[in-house]
Length: 287
Image 1 (cartoon, rainbow, N blue to C red):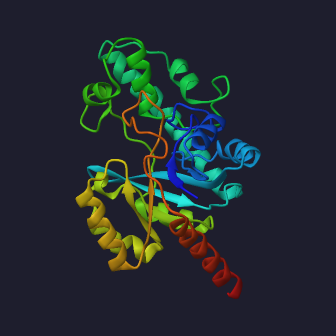
Image 2 (cartoon, rainbow, N blue to C red):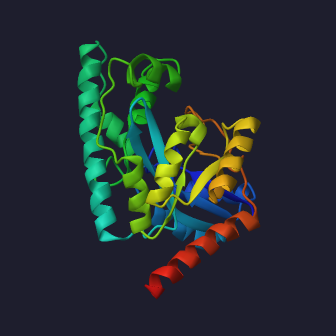
């Protein structure tokens, strides 16, 4: 029962449709995947339907993008109630702010002598047919347009020259704090996990997040070195947290050219997640 618990689709900044992701997971020999699009759950129904059709279990998930000074902290949520009205309303607010941010970045790019069409970016980001009421648009979509137009030679160059924190076209946007994201996942009945902690380099927030309900750390990650894996496995054991793993697959031609299933969790690891979910549900029922 090999599992990859960190995967993105075209409903956020991945390149493949939910159906294509599920079928590629099947081809890779995976039997369980988690769809964890950034700040959106819009691709989940299609992924789960395709999973049912071909025999792949799809865990409903999300990856919240949160802010701290100088860095982002990402919080994964597994087994969330992705149909909850209050959650959909929150995600709508985040989506609308993301769209407004795109307009502001495009204006900054124009002042730098770079003309890109907002509608081109939205069409690339939001399916089907450029709709803006679904999906999650972000800087990677702008970077891909810049690459397509030959303005940059790579996605990384687009970020380095124009889109990163200290770059001239950077614009901040509405984000939850890490603590708010953990509480949001909890409220949605899910399991909150600190994603790729070595990327954020904010180990000091882990005790605070545990108080808010953090349940796990993404120990196994495509860009974690062996020493980082050892370090975060030790932290997970120290704090009594679950540990998860995933490839962070987005498709090829992005800044994250990893193969679906590069990181695989075992039956036992997934069973621990499911057992945690069941125990939390029992506690709620007792209350």
